[in-house]
Length: 619
View 1 (cartoon, rainbow, N blue to C red):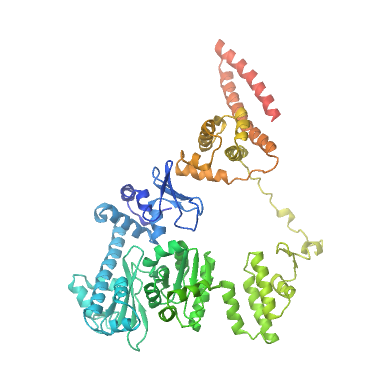
View 2 (cartoon, rainbow, N blue to C red):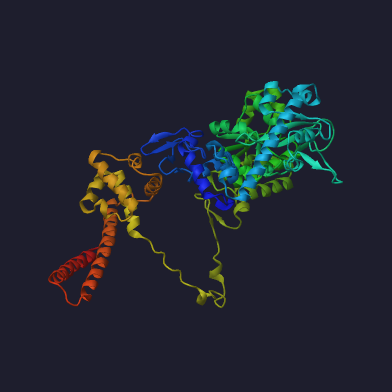
């Protein structure tokens, strides 16, 4: 949910939510269809074929029953656009036409918004300046890009530019535009002189690549030097608007393509992204450095189910690939590695071979395990015994991380074939001195350590053991859940239950509402499904309905289960009635001069109480 630690005025947040209808905003990202009181569509946060993403106009809330993502409009934009809270509120405020200077009462937040917006504004001005430099007259930057095979249309699409060799050209331009020196420095476009007597342009004699976030704002720059000067590539420093480890180059263009393909290709360089895009491969982005960070990995997972790493084939590229693979695996991405058969990098390959050939390479990309096997085969000479042993020992460390028995079995056989070491020996290396169960890949201890301990040191802490408190379960609530699931699935069960239980007997208010809808629907139809019930519920009630649908009920001995569920519900009902009767009797007994009506009421309660106790004993 929303982190209110940013200290925005709550009235301002409420105003932003009020002016941005959640259905209208989410419809920009998801094709929604009206379903009863709510809207449904395919979840933008995970890959699915059947819609499980629901939006409630009534509650201004969304919930995905597939992946569990939920929240209000601010949560949605933060996740969909990879923005922090301040940028999200600023963006939604901009869409709603809200002036923050007038509406926000937090000085801290006003200052943060001001700094970010000022950096965005200055960067946009700088991007236009660099772009005009590139196209206005002949320069080394334009010649370099044209020689690399880029078309003018592509150059315009990415807003590429050129920074002259002059030490103060951009700084003077921005000062003339009315920005002060501290603001230009804050944007990371100038550096301070060592003697502290002035500032000079950070980027000089470089082709400029604007780094644009998913909302279209220029957050930073990357510059590629022309000539042999170092560093070859230079990025903007961290600013109020830019953190290198939280962003990816080209994602502003790739995000829509990624959503359609559910696959994203990650490359190393700016030119790799641009060349692939120009050749029709648009689901591509670049990490702003050689190794992917966890934040970047989470961002990729947000947009795509599968990530294909396509780094350079040199040694540095391989090391970066391995680090990236491990980070991606940790956050739950399916990862593969592209090994180009010709050409050092994707830019060079696609320029020579074209789109079809590159996509064939993507289709043949190696899995994480296969890629690591390939690297280890290069490092070890499998023609020698020593090389084979080292190879197997290294591989088994990797295989220990596998959770699928099928994968494990397939790779063990593959390693045995390539190393000429037996399957049993490889299994022993993986599982140690434990018995190996071929049916379920589980380890079974040969020895029980306690069994062979001396009686003097066995169980020496038995007097310190504290018994666990039994976990109390609301059995009647679980019985209601299971009963509702069975009744929804089968009309015959419904009729059996209806004879002894009314929907009023469901004590939880949401369960009672669902039961009432169920009773009414069965009066009209022979069958009932979740969608028919959902149409009469709000989004929070629908979430409870889906929980009910996932509760475990017996497939056999259903009749016995029904009796148990009904008895549990009735027992709870009778216990509540018993408590109410006892309370009423106590109150009546306290009365000194009882009326005839009170005496009659006491007799009635006693008779009813006796009957109730008999019923409870039966249960």
